[in-house]
Length: 356
Length: 260
Image (tube, rainbow over all chains, first blue to last red; front, side, top):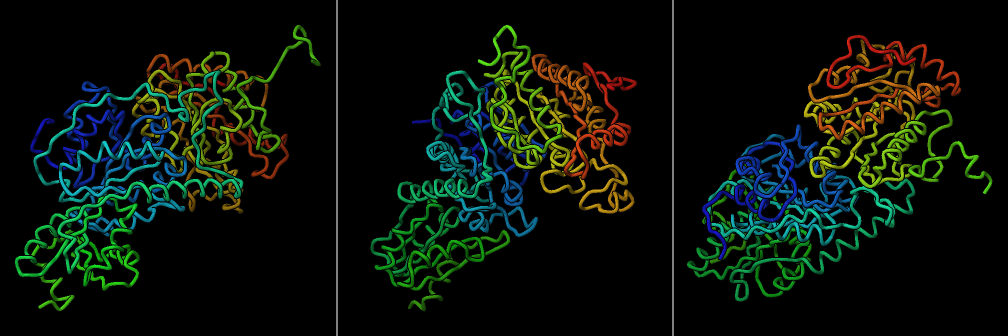
């Protein structure tokens, strides 16, 4: 058993960063994730593991510091919240184009614009469909607990290096701010000396020089590069789909929700079943790759589905693509930092499908 | 072998690749590349040097420099250099940037890397124009100077003033060595090479940024022959961007030492 602590989601993420053997964190303060850098600063990670911590002059600089360090084969990360993640998009596109691994945390707040500092899930499109310019995807992990804010750091780094691609943790103001018990994993060694054959660490006589770049002036070469990237995303879709099911097998009505909404919907399933409605919940853990196959399978078994999100309805589009018209897919959600109650969700389900 | 070893008086450093340079004939970039690589070669630090190419004419610098390099998003080279150097404090890290990259879109990264005193070298090639995109106004375009977006000359009342960013970063406590050079005559090339050497040697001291501006021509963008462009540069660029040391060993040089 690992060490157990009562922590905020943001703090658990930061502690997990140190324990994962992360080499460097570069960030810029923004609510509701400022605890990440504050916790790291208080922990003095340079004394604990030698990890570098630097507060950058902007989110733009922070993501490009990540790019530089990642290009030398280091395990590096950054975190921010919605407006800051928008600023990082150019850098993320370059990281993908140059095939660099890194971990990025978005503790989502209400938008658009400066919006609110309260929780939201309105960055789903940005996270799962690319975000920056060009054809690309990232593996998107959606933690639904403080425990997963810790566990997904380790998983995220593993996946980032497996695919040489950034991994995004899509959290939200609830998961980042709330306190829960978390079982921390043991300190892992920093892999400072491990040799990434592709990394820019200085050209030695025994190898050709290593170049980290995303520019190809020859369109035929650029197209080949794009095909290579697309093949990675297809492999992710085959190998990395993760989801969790609650009471799905006998369900007449299926709720589909991720992150904090999934936590709320677990209660909604219980409330609905108490009313005699056989409800279930499918919780995508990876938003890209999306659990399309499982949702398609369940579409043949249920009377209706309802996507529940803190947005105007974004993930619901992926649910409808998976279902492909086999069953009616409803949507319920709140916006701008407002959060639905479990009862609201049940009421919406009853109303949409005229149950009872 | 055409030249026997005892008769060999000069050879291209192996730290420049054999790839033909993509620069216009008469441009200074090739000379600046070669001098930096000669320094890395002479110091024997190829295995410990990481360079960063910008967006601009020198976006493909990594094709020509035979060292490990990264290509940065426009203006972000000092942020990349920061990320690399913080993780690898014993490596030699340098950025290679143009005026649009360093003094316009990347101003924040430039100022803050210099102000933090990152232990890196910054090579800043200033030709007063956006060369790669076709000769638009740069932050360093002189008052009255023509470009494709100032076809009647830069009107400072409308378009603002040229930015002397080298003097600006010299005032920051994080810069250790700030110097301005050119590579249009053999004497100036030698002076620049000495400065480049100092920029790499300084990284052993861990005292902050070495920032070297190279005032260069852009005969294509300026629509001049290479010889005329160099003459125009001497007559117009040098009075505004005077050559010489601005800060040495962390101390401001009261009067710029002239590098003719």
